[in-house]
Image (cartoon, rainbow, N blue to C red; front, side, top):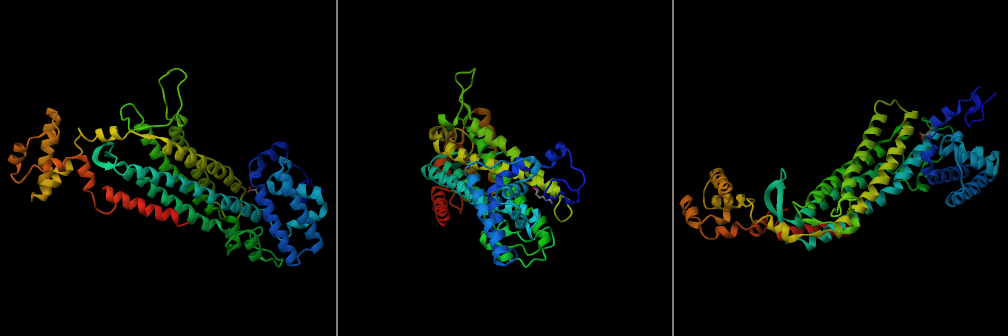
Length: 461
Ligand code: ARG
């Protein structure tokens, strides 16, 4: 006696509905239905070409799978948790469609290589979209940077005024950060580009299959060289989740600045109405909800990485049912990062840069203290000594409300007779920015070069 499961031969009793439900993955892995059909088509074509199954049978299966593809596209396929997962659901539907010959499809294949293949295909299809979305954001950053090369603002360390910088320079910092994200996702493609199909359960198969053929048909660069590794590997998903987590770190940092800079106190940026929300009680409110939500969504993306790392930790080779837990977090991450990037792009693109406020914030502050120390050092004072002298002037200035520009030349010359009137020029924020001409520095010229270089990077593909 056997149960009515596809694998029911050696069973005498069925599990309860609750057990079926608990073990089922169909509620989420139906997202890979298209990939599963593609994998099956490549497999059956190979079974036909290698004459592992008769041509007539293979043709019936191929025709059946094509019909399933159409029904799927039309939203006409219905899945059940009794059939556990997408693989067995589709096989059951195919059997209804073409009869018992459908059973030949699973020759020389296991669900273990099947699910791994589907999951690779799923991610392989989505990575280019993610990379493109990242590049769209980079393009906007470059455009905004180009408009703001000469916009001066305070640069911060410890969130304290440090040295003045160009706002374009700030934007380009994110461009290059995101470029590393692009490169990480591109590298991720390499490890996603291997075909597990034909690894079968874990050890390969006795049938004379052609793994090269199925790999090529599915657009993979090559088959996994080791069948055990092929069915056990989820590194490509871990890499993806890790890359996504780093990307969200980046977005959350920028969001934090957007939120801060949109406050009454800073007032450096004003988000467009489309990317802001109001309050149901306070009529004056314009809240940066989108930036907060992106910052908040970093939590689930980090969580999905931690989740899969924990699932995979200590798992013995090869397939274990634990691995069914690999999908939801990965799907969720894809579903999260794409809109985060798109919203971020629009938000930055449409935000008004309050250049005058940014600039004003650098005129009465002490972020030109390094300029004065550098000036003294150029006149021959050891930098440490210069630093100490300027430190004292800053302290005095804070107590008396005097900025470094307001100190009279006579006083400067008491400190060091070589100081000339040109010191006031050096103390201006714009001069401080302009003079930072070291490679990658914030001078207008250097920022323009960064923009030029960024354009070359963006044009590469
Ligand atoms: N639904 C399963 C998963 O997502 C498919 C693989 C099942 N293989 C097995 N030997 N039980 O992991």
